[in-house]
Length: 119
Length: 108
Image 1: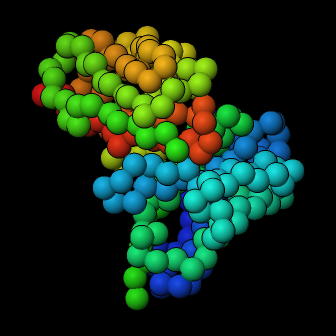
Image 2: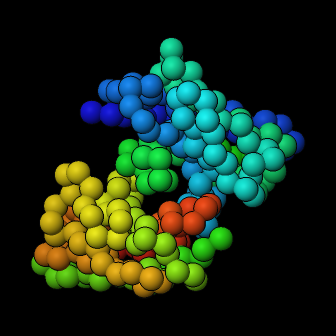
Image 3: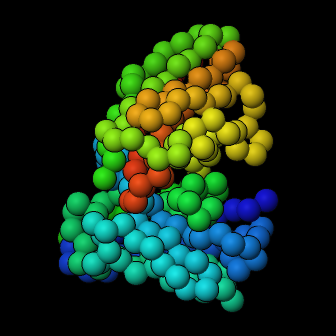
């Protein structure tokens, strides 16, 4: 059964870079025509799609976040990663990784990891 | 960006009853590209419905979706205690995709 697990620091200082990794088990990132995505949910706000990556390297980002986000994939480690620079308190959220069917339907999710931006 | 408004915010029902959750879009949702997700505390969100009415793999037929255009509904029949969760709708017909704020379903 496909499983996804987020990992990374739970606390990031303002203006620094938030880095998270999603490890995929029970299936290969490069085994089929899926994208792999990151989403987040700030406290009291709706879920927000950040971006998605294809294992061959194609990426799609939310226009509102595109200038600060990089998503990459490591097929050897069966992982994909999120880098979010110049963070502020507004970037405090639960961050999720998920499998994207290519149409932005997310059919498998990680449990989410809380990242707090604070000095 | 399409804004999705879910109602009610909280729904409290008894086992065996039927729950009706609403999702209204600020603009037309192309091709019925509307999904529903279930989220329980401490668990990964789960895809329930996509394409407005297609059940995802392994989802029981107690869960059904309907609607088109700007108005969509998730119906859960014969409620069970395990259905207690927050339910989110998502449109993916226009980029960027967007989510509603959620409906919390409580089973008495």
